[in-house]
Image (cartoon, rainbow, N blue to C red; front, side):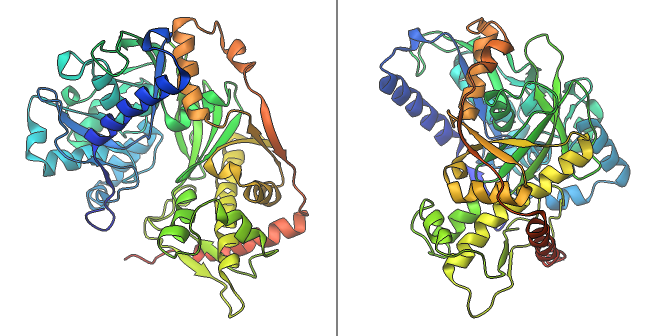
Amino acid sequence: MPHPGWVEHDAAEIWQRVQEVIAGALKQADILGSDLAAIGITNQRETTVVWDVSTGQPLSNAIVWQDTRTTDFLSTLTDAQQQTIRFKTGLTIAPYFAGSKMNWFLNNVPAANSENTRMGTIDSWLLWNLSGGVRGGVHLTDVTNASRTLLMNLETLDWDQELLDIFGVSRGLLPEIKSSSELYASTDPHGPFGTAIPIAGILGDQQAAMVGQVCFKRGESKTTYGTGNFALLNTGTEIVRSKNGLLTTLCFKFGNQPAHYALEGSVAVTGSAIQWLRDQLGIITNAAETENLASSVTDTAGVYFVPAFSGLFAPYWRSDARGAIVGLTRAATKAHLARAALEAICYQTRDVMDAMVADSGVPMHEMRVDGGITANSLCMQMQADIMGIEITRPLIGETTALGAAYAAGLAVGYWSSQDEVKKQWQQSRRWSPTSTLEVREAGYKQWKKAVERTLNWVD
């Protein structure tokens, strides 16, 4: 993080690590690359790479989704431009998305304006490298990743010239948009797999988790708990435009079948709030300790923690918000703060889910969950209690990787249909609410009050 608000990755290191992971996975499974029917790619969305196709080298560090350096550029957009962007993309105007990151590269990295330059999200960077890189790599992306750039039109599923003009990005830099499940290319035999394997699935991580949780039908939803939290609700082939601060995005598109859309709510800081307790405050030495520490008290003693470290995402979309811990008394301990951090994860998830129900008109009785924090049983019980619904976790927790595998397998006929894939899903654990409506609503009211305290902090 070279400057406040900047978050970067080394794209060359990402490719290096991917190759190591491929070698390690093949070794652990005791198979050869030639034993694989197909591979799928899933990636952290929005994170943007710029590279030179003649050398294969990145021209700058990748700009990560949490990065806020493009806030000033976005503030220069006219109301009419903002309205156009929102309608055509289903997204909100935020530095989170790839379009303004690309604009930053073009204005701040001199080499980015060369004819050998390509830009894309991490999926495109990996696909280009896996399919040969400088030896003929293909420059493609899928609809789910493209829908996170502010440059793709939700209706046409193609780059939109008006949007490209607003962000100053030329079409020639960008990958061609494909479906989420088709044969894009084969792996380079000289690459980490050592043979040519069909690359046949690409999904952004949250959409991949939807597929991994087999949420193929309208009204099905999942929440993935990672660094941030991401909740998606499948709205079928209909584009539902949110009135409650949610994003309208692609859910998936399998081959020639019609695209499915989704409503998405993202919370910027959930798992990373636990990392903050560990790395910045030193309250815990590892994330797993949080459950024991938080369990040592029965409530938060009135403490609320709103981890708006880089503003608030859905449904607020307030980049002027900053983190706050409120309700402190002399009696508050590190255990209360740890419990408040878990509650914050659950309350922010409820904020998003309430907005989804309001937008879609589909009541929610159950939520499928996955990701790191779902191993924290206390947090999942809190989630059931704060929302008043059933929470269910699948047997295979790595739903993101699973979703990419399902997309690739469907493309090459390894699975014959979505119904066959659906039969793979099994439950590992279920949490039912134990709270009363009265207790639930009282706690939520205080949470809303705490959120108000974080607003209007940055001028």
